[in-house]
Length: 306
Image (cartoon, rainbow, N blue to C red; front, side, top):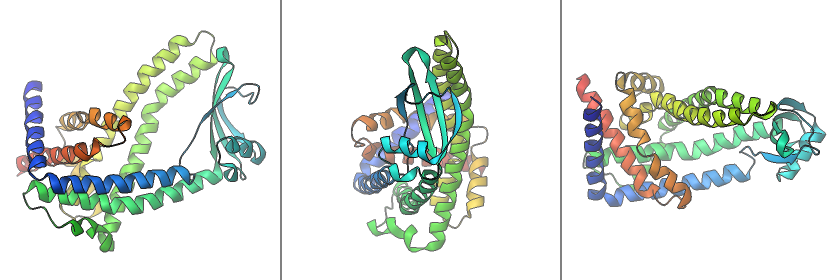
């Protein structure tokens, strides 16, 4: 059974590669445009206070044990200043700290109330900019799979129609919230083990265990995320669907073959890791390649249903 699933996965990916090279110009244009907009959104998010930062401090600078602490405006402003965000600590906030006594250091993650509000606004703005284009790209790759690539202007069609824009934002917001919740849940065992390892004498074994649990948690979180992931492809392929219908049908579609879908998505991980070290250039190939492969997989599931 496993060999059969692996063979099917390889066959789908081979077909996706053939389709990519046959229609490489529209595929590369899609990937390049989305990559440029996504990178611009990431820079905007990072440099406008829309991302969290942590720091390692000497315990003499911040004599706190491992835990979650309320922080007043003075302390929070001081910490945010060290990170170049001095204007975001005026309302106070909370501190997440991990103290490691053998090194005499404490890792601190400041969560300033003002920064959290800015994060919500900045990430919402980035989502409004990127989501419609992403769905335009997904729709174009669906047409490519059928041998009928559309004009480049169609990539922006999800901006022009506000109903489509709302649908794209709705599905992306639902997926982002689901990913956040599952990530926090799956990361909890590894984090608790890490906290115990830093707080207890001779906790090196617990810290090693936390690494294993963190890796397993990351895999579990991504597996949970892929449960709802088909929704974005279903909506892009059939924009007349409602957000709820896309999520429900996407959830039901992969029932019984969730592990195969997870492994298919996971098989592109080396490409995305390589992109982290090669200035995202591999994504010009990996993104359309992965999308085409997923469309083929979902199409095979829909064919089986009928």
